[in-house]
Length: 123
Image (cartoon, rainbow, N blue to C red; front, side, top):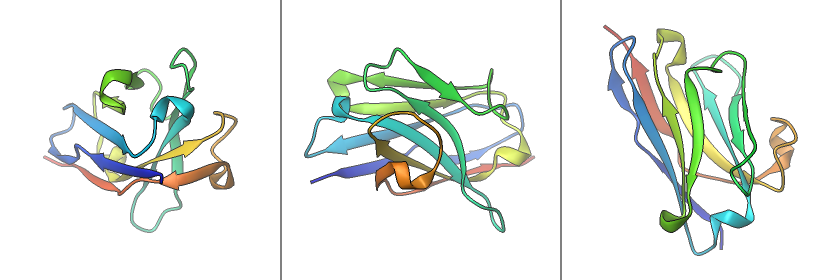
C-alpha cells in the first residue's frame, strides 16, 4: 500500500525558509522517483521539483531553481523540499507524489499523492 504524508508547511515572512517532508509508510520510497507540486487558489497545479530514485538526479522548475532543493533521507524513508528565499508567489498547497521516473510534470506520470501542506508567505 502506497501511503505518503506531506508536512512541514506554515507561515513565513518573505525571504524566510521552510523544509517540507514527504514520509512514506508501508513501502520503500527508494523504489520511486518523487515529485513536488504546488497549487495556489485559482491556479492549476504546478510541478516544482523531482528527485530520482537514487537521489543523484534532481529537476527544479525555473521559478524555484536556486531557491528550492529536493533531497532524500533513505534511513527515514523520507523526501524533503528545502525552500529558501521564499516569495509571496510561492504561497500554495504543496504536494508530493511518486513516479517511475522524473520525465516531466504531467500528472498522469505520478501514481500516489500525499496530503497537501499549506505554505503561506506574508509580512
